[in-house]
Figure 1 (cartoon, rainbow, N blue to C red):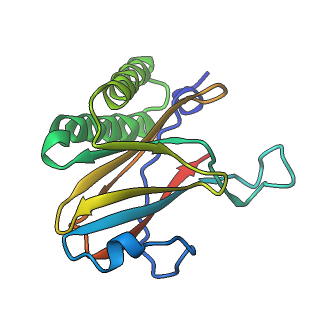
Figure 2 (spheres, rainbow, N blue to C red):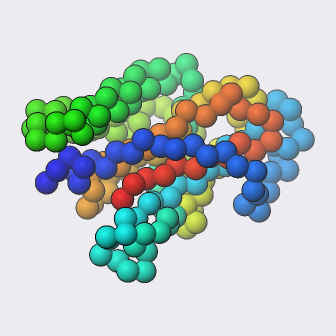
Amino acid sequence: MSVRRLFQISIISLTVWSVSWGCSAASTQGNKKHTAILGEIVVQVPKEAPFPDIAGKTVPDSNFPVYLFGWNESRSLREWLEKLGNDMKSISEDPDSSEKRWIAEKRAEDIYRMVTSTGSLQSTSTDKHGRFMFRNLRVGEKYLVVAADLVADKGIVLTHQIVGPLSPGNNKIRLVNDW
């Protein structure tokens, strides 16, 4: 099996938009010191997928674990994620290199352990619509949002985004996980 199949790793796109999801944000809208991150995780399904009802569509990724890390506390994790991104670029340049694949697999395993075992500021899982929320965050601060799970047919799935500095009110993000 290829690394792509075992370890589906996505570079995440961040989309900040102003459309409300109908979530109540009364606790953050009037408070200038605290804010929230409203997010969603979606899966981009390729047109050639063997499931005609979702092929070529973007669907919500439900019940997916999401972790929030403070900026200063996440320095080591951010460095590991950057190295993994470089590993994936290197594999795309030389897809037949088993050594590069092995390095990326081991790094993904290490990152998964770091994310799930170190103290995140907050953690949650996406709802049936692929949405999640982190509340009571400080305005002006930067955070690292990491979604990580061990998925039976894909291996380790990691997606991440640096968010901030946060604005008052709700800060919305969208993490896209390639199939």
